[in-house]
Length: 454
Image (cartoon, one colour):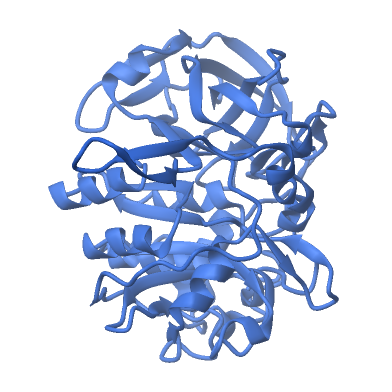
């Protein structure tokens, strides 16, 4: 569970998400011709646009200032000849250091869905003495421009800088809330029409070390305002064998990382899927963990997803980036549209981490309510119900749960809900993390493409 007793940044986003329909009729509808060629039905277009830069051509197509593109099985960008040096004062340590830097800026991506929200995510390796920054700028639907917004300052380790989001970024039309760009008042009709992403790669002067970035992308969305969502029809019966880890057995451990395991739903879920794909930390990487603690890899995941500004382990892109630090894994943050999307992924062997909030009475068998919680969807029963590894469980053995399809679908996909005080607050609108191999199978590629991820 993610800090369930206090309002999360997702609550702050409620006004932005909840007002979306008031300002717009929503995404354009697509007419589907029947066998006679007539328009037989009108179905809404997917209200999500995920775009990523991953190929050699993608990286060559951007604007480089001191970076160079590298080929190979996983093309990417690295520091070539640095563009210059800059001082950076780490806000969490007060330490000022000089860093060489180089930048790469994407081409403009015009959103197929003019967006009320955008979330960037990336996959990279940052050796000791290096780190990176991801920024976003865009053009509003009225033709004006946003500032450059910092979407994250990140390193896989924590010895050089403290990975961090950046607060207080706004132009009074849009704001960055930890990891999410959001239009302040969608009811005005204002949207983000297009964006560019900029990478800045840093290293200690005089060294040859460099970050390597293999994937950079962003999910833009304009999810309709809704307390409930249409029911989907069950279509897949399958359960993936995913390791089970409880966050609760870590309660009180390493309180410097958001007061310990009670708040570690996100890294615990991430670790389950990382190990599903056959990866895990080495003994040397776990040497810092108290040997008396069970499942030390969960402690490790909490430490290396922790956002020092947010004060928690629930930064969505930081979790995806952590997963991609393991050999030949990729991680993205996106939104899905239904349980049918999740079934498509599970059928291809890809589990997903979903983000949801709910009252205790809204999810039968959970036994708790939460203002924000991550769990892992690993399959579907013959009745279509959701099989989830829910880390908010007393033991590892108790992690596997079966939740009613209709209840789960609604709490995950809605954008508005009532909290325990009767106040209208936000839901995540289908946010999920997807982790998958660098070289997916043909079936996995098709499933990812079907849910808008390439």
